[in-house]
Image (cartoon, rainbow, N blue to C red; front, side, top):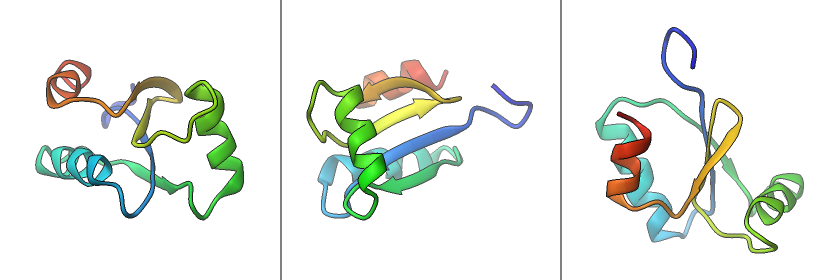
Length: 82
């Protein structure tokens, strides 16, 4: 974690309801993140597949470069960002 907070990366697809929910949750708490759209980035899509057992499941979250969750619930987000 940096002094300004964790570096959050979220792998997304623009049409995904779960992505929208997680982004809203992060935005409401002022948590900044880098968004990577796997529908536009093949390398990122392959990385998501590697993290998720061959599936392009989104949202996939990394904190400080480490995989932490795929399709997290609100309760999981609360635990991750205490």
